Length: 470
Image 1 (cartoon, helix red, strand yellow):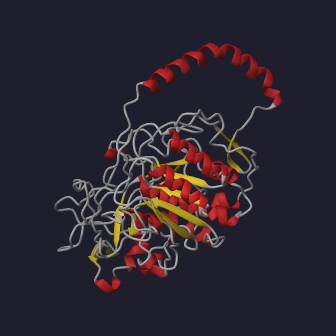
Image 2 (tube, one colour):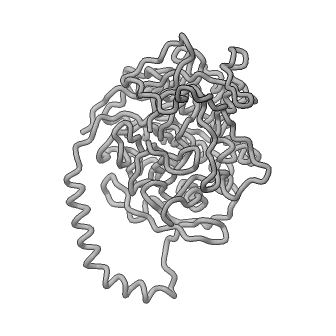
């Protein structure tokens, strides 16, 4: 049984910088926000400007099940609907900073930030609406299930869950996910962070039907801080992701982190774009479109680190994808809170695809192989059942969130339950600091979603940062 704990790990203020040549300069107050767009490296990597020529998410509502969302943050003005508080520590309508680090506000900004040139953060789906469902200062037992049901009953098209805990899902959580799926909702959750002890995919991401999001680094490879497991569905950027915060929490209004919380928020924004572009698609076919158009990474087909691959927003919005009758993440799903492996991807003229059946021509061979594999399957089933029975008790619920950046001189650090980690990205003594390298779109974009080619040097990390959840 999981009990509550403080929601989010410490997030410190990011010292935003502007760069010219190779010498980074600390930006004065008037130019502070000029660097926000430059630090959103993932927008160009994912070709979000190109996606925004197709849709910006208008008409889609994304529920953010988290610690409340502050509607007064400039990047979110006009985007935050009245929501719901799940307990006495939450703002009644979910529109507030109900935890110490405004984690929910940051995730909402990644999803639906308004932008405004280089001055503000641009969300993945800036015309989507945010429906806050606040867990308050803690995530107590039962609140994930209650939050999912409330969001599904109040108009959510997508539910973002950048929260979670280790172990097996409760029957109530599994039932809540099925309830939301029956109401045509797409559910997205962060897979977990190894720095917080999450090596396997956590709850609710490990519930069948939920898009479990693992993390990618700037180079497009698996980021070392991401949890992994057989329940992984898709991967999205998690390294050095900037997000807005109220100035009551962060003096300069922004923080930066590296966590699957951020990856899930990016994914939820992409889901919102797809739902806006294809309003007649049900949730099953929205998910099917995302996994069929993903860029396969790692071993061919679905794997523990990337799931079906790296999300490709433009491909998801533009490719022809055959429809399915059943939800692809529920195919063969067991009753417990752990997803069964899905069929592997196969290549087609429309890009990576998921194979959902066997052709008649191959039927005889498959049947013969099955006769040989039945004893092996029985042995594997026994092993899996024994392994599950030995899983440790569930840990307290807490969100996998991004880590801190370093504050500018004299700025206070936001409070939180975890001490800041050592700074792995600092510049060694005597070495000139690197300039902040925004991901400018290349003159001739490579195929796919713009990730660096194998062996290419990834863009540099923002200068002046501290430790991140890795």
